[in-house]
Length: 299
Image (cartoon, helix red, strand yellow):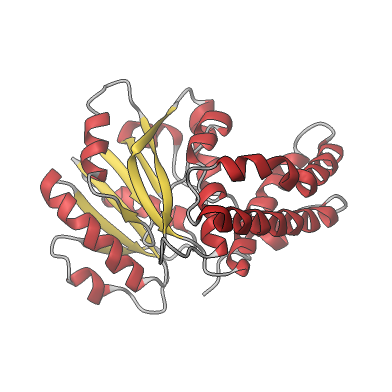
């Protein structure tokens, strides 16, 4: 059986959309669905009650990682699947997952994540940017040995071996994936296991994401030889990177809106890379990045 675990924090309408797409698939495949509320202003009981069979529980420790861990303690399935409350599983998400796990050599699956547009004919600038740069799961799996926890599935013995997800002080998806890799676990890229995710609504949401990732990256850099010098070089590379990515933007098959969409994607890319570089400069002389690590969690 597959157990699907959904961490939730102050997103009742998006949770309802997620469950509306997921629960029919769960009925067809015999999966169970568990929602773990993580300290929302209002517990989403009215939403969950609209979907008979879905279990609701809570985790007081802040962060989606601890919420996922709580869900695992309640799960009955031999396959643990994770999707975020603001994601929508595409048709066949669970069926594709089950099919891939028929191969006994598959231990962990990382699915594709694409942008859920409000209007395909007129995508927003952030939708255009995130279509190409927001959810680069194949790249993360191939080159960085992790994948996003918002569309992830694994066999239960893998979770037991690697351990649970980290709290908000770390980028828990990267941390978990790289701990798994260190134990010899490989993530299988599963493009047919597709989830759709709405783009962030404004630039401030993008910056909160990079506050968090930058803090994690800097703490890691401090543990390595010549870490500060390498951090300086990385800062310069981030600032210059939009020029190098321009060809990729114009070749992308993931960005909607034609030429306009590609120009918008490039504009947001330039803005966010300059923001990241500006964030990285003062860290060259800092002792730690703890000030940044929790700024992403708002609401």
